Image (cartoon, rainbow, N blue to C red; front, side, top):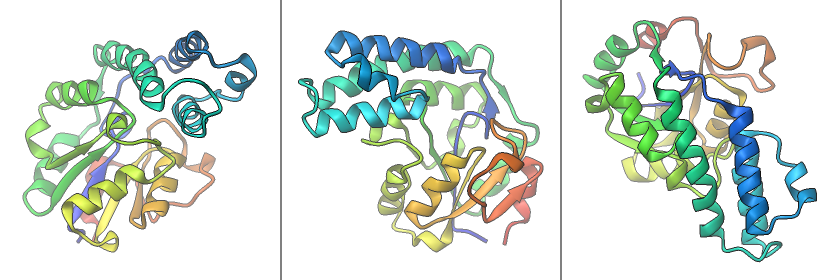
Length: 216
């Protein structure tokens, strides 16, 4: 049995129907207003890429905008989509009961590309906010998944070795973040990505949320 179970949020604990394409479009418009040229923006086509690539440009001095302003600008756009998606949010079957059981025997954490406000409201909506011991969101890291920075931060805060921790998500990025941080990876079927579409192989596959309880 693991000493800590860390979870992704959207697609893993529940489904929020996040408007990804529109969010990316508006975030790129915000960056253009800040002075990013269109050639750089054309390379940013996915939700995570917009954050990671824009911050890299800022940190390397390739744009005349401080990194904290870039992060704040993108965050303001994404926060609005986080909150808008919560109205359509639905929890996974058996999720709350499974987390309640895990909470009685291990540390429970959250590492998500949702922002802090949206994550807090989502956990409250699902009535599971009291079950989590630690929460790391996109607001707490420089680079988001597939980078494992957030998981490394959690390991440092908890003081638990990586081999005694599992990170459970529903995308390839979750598995890659697990590998970078040196923790085990779990994949829950029925999220944003199909099992056969994964480019990286998870350590564990869960066909229902309650299957997590059987992990030793």
